[in-house]
Length: 490
Image 1: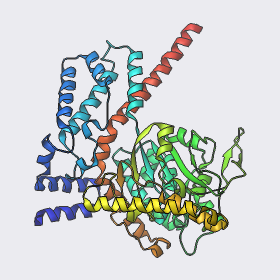
Image 2 (image 1 turned 180 degrees about the horizontal axis):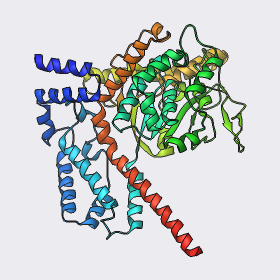
Image 3 (image 1 turned 90 degrees about the vertical axis):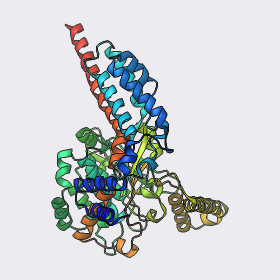
Image 4 (image 1 turned 45 degrees about the vertical axis):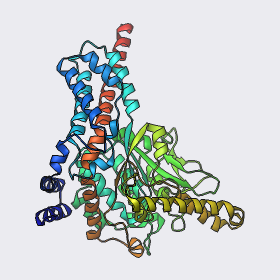
């Protein structure tokens, strides 16, 4: 690496905005020859021949105005990982994006979908189009942003969502546990315009200085914690008094909050507008942030049919969701058809042990992965062997169950955004953060996201386009249905 490229890398590390980072990254790619790598189709990482053939076919069909041929070709299947084009390794070489062939192919699919959806294509019926778009949307799947439990590192999540919002890449499906539930709730109870104000540095500093305590106390771990009543007051100030259903109706975003059962024989829950539409978000956040041993378990509340507050499942109480389901991938897949996960991972308990990819390359990476899996199996085997002995000691049994639950979870997704610093002083995690430290965490989240922006843009572009088309077509279908009803009544 030359002196010039080292300087460009330093510019990227010190960039204050995405525009500054992108400019330095583009210069770096040119200096390193990565722009030439992007322009060439060939690579052992993916099947470039199949993608080139399919791209040429789609372009030819559009040029010949063969709308039915285009529909038939797209109907054969639209895959986000066609020929291996979704591999994370294809985004690890150049700073900005991946092979131009992949970008061109995604662009062509989106252009083809938008053409078929447009009124100018009148040789295919509205009903046939609607049927195709619904099936394509269902088969392609959806993306979600999952924010881990984080303690005081939740401001890293703030930086991540700030960067995604600015680029128009924030998914509509979000999940959060513990600290992540706070950020998720802020996102899902405020409109885009409100969020742009909330996430400005000036507003963040104002909130921190107003009453430094909400985030530090819910992060768990400040030696001198606020009283529960005071924390509750601050939650009520920052998060509107909404149910999950009201939140969805207000923003169109689907909020999911993980909570773990305080009782031994109960299972964890994922709260959202589908499974628990009338549950109140404020209480859900309090429950998801109730770190066992530091905060009391929380009873959830909901609105009844008259809109009055009442206990929700009054015989049960709930604690920190990251203990049992930090990243609820299976539940999101079942509820929303999610098959692509963007993870903002800031859980201090697991950061030293996670990597940014599911695929391990190199001897050392494979050995580390194998050692981790072996350790997990030994822990599970030991728990099974000593289960009877542990069951006699309630506190010890609960601690063991918590440890096993934490160890057995997966903490990465398809796109993983992690802090550059993976190791944090545990004593500092318990302490209140200064304004300067908070703003550094926010900027850390932004910078970590900038490196992933083009990957996120490419891998979510088709699902975003399909989602918009389906929403528009279903709205038109409803208008057509209502018009027919009126005509019949007349």
